[in-house]
Image 1: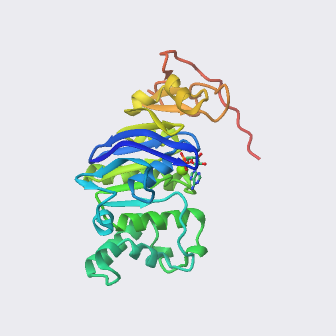
Image 2: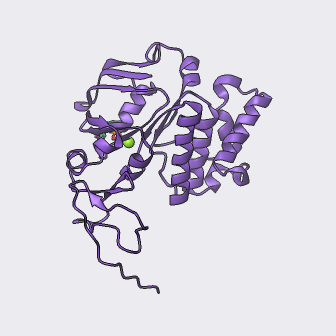
Image 3: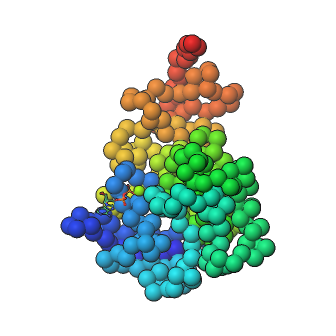
Length: 288
Ligand SMILES: Nc1ncnc2c1ncn2[C@@H]1O[C@H](COP(=O)(O)OP(=O)(O)O)[C@@H](O)[C@H]1O
Ligand SMILES: [Mg+2]
């Protein structure tokens, strides 16, 4: 379990974390959501000891992250930062091998090579394994970073905006893979996500931050409500239930509601959180 207690932090005079307290249970997938500047990355940096907070403590199980050794932490927790500053003149496979560094110190065992290969397989990266990072698309590079994190094979995985640059297919396979890592391997996974619908569909727990504070947390059903989302994001998001999964519609203001005939399968429920059933006009499509 990760336990954050009374964590506060300032940059200059700006308070970016204000008395944050949080427990992240083992084997669960937690998504952290919130507007730009809410303090999500700073919180992840504090948990992974990239930043020392002004006050407060963080424990990973029995390890106090402020006093534990580097090796002890990096065998327990892997973190993907939002901005990677890793040299571009590195091949994909070499990057992923870095994930094994806390164990191998550069001398890889057959077990290390196996884990590196497995991570490359998982992320569809075998065709690119010998390419330099600057010869990849943004999404391929993002997958290479995530492969490095998976190769580290830690019980705790923190990913700051892991879906950045990923196309729809790789985004959903990434979320499926992380969900499986929680369900089948008991990994504890904490993600910063901007897409509330991925958060809703794949998380056990959603933590919502605003202005340096955790303002609400709960199950996807508890968080995916128009009133809660308005508080978190300061915008009106229409919420619908689709076969038990809550989805937020936010692509247009005054969102058109209800899946029309082109979107709905037989048996879909199309009620919003007020219980009202709404039917959209059939969409018209122009193919050029
Ligand atoms: N190194 C820094 N120096 C000064 N201010 C920073 C620094 N990093 C982040 N901030 C500020 O702290 C606030 C929280 O940032 P961050 O944790 O990155 O938010 P989020 O990840 O939720 O978008 C923002 O207002 C941001 O401008
Ligand atoms: Mg951030």
